[in-house]
Image 1 (cartoon, rainbow, N blue to C red):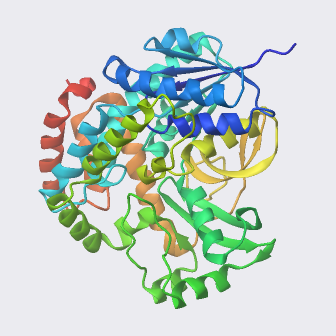
Image 2: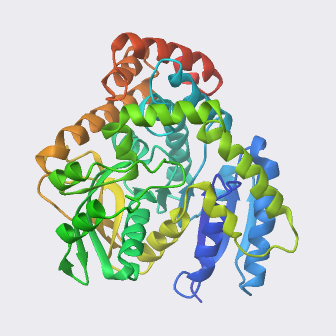
Length: 438
């Protein structure tokens, strides 16, 4: 009898975990998991136990024999794992709230993965990912690391540059959400829509859209710009409409996060208004999570509750399950993931991480080369790639000047003076989770 699959989820106490479990249950016939290890840190133990209880009930309800283990001992969990998924948040939501609030004081967007907030999430996260990889090298050297801890692109970049670990894939729900949103707008099944995705994490463009295999880009852009339709966003990003002439000239579909770069003033105004009323996104999510965990505690609940979709990460975990299933079964289907460029986008270094459509095989993702990005999108993508690289270096070295450089070259930060003021305050605010900065 063949050995079942062992999957380890670091950050197992996350409110997203029930969606992950649902995805594994759905795919059990093609993805025969025998063990699921949910790992967390002592501060997350209560949530781990609540989510773990729900996970066990969901599996029991489905009549499956997947053994769920809950532990605070990462090394114990990692031994002989086949796949390791990471979905943790260093400093918890309190740290995200600081990332969002502090930049606002300086007239700068405060956002989880963009601008100063994205820099600091990377500074906190990258050293932890590299520690996890050291454990994996020793305990499960053949495992795949599937990371959906943000900022996923910067984290993938850091792993490729500062470790010898090659079996890493960064994953994001944004391209999946874009595809599902477009299918919904067109009133068709999602599998009838194909999008040529290319760019970086939270900086990805839909370059061409196909419906039933036929090119449909111009027709979709006409529809998008002529009707009073949502232009496609997420729970955590306000749906500001694009200027029709801009989208027609761009002739590509921006992702929801592009609003921070193409609509900076309006997005800043929306963030300020939110911060003064219902709170920053992190503060809203803290309330949402409190309600979710109350639901999860209910001993009679044995499914993923629909309220989870308000959390903002719809399709995240399903995308992860799909990816794992495709690697395990060598499906050779096409999925957008973060992986090493290897010449897929001409204007990005070969050794850098990109987010692009890939053929998913048992040996991992094979990027589908697009040549180069259109001129209109290329410069911004290259600027963000420069930011990711310098930020990753700062995370690894703990060098103040490198961190200041990363902050200053981010397009959302207006000057080196403002960059220094934000950097100094945020280094102090996050001191407990930035030991590399001494």
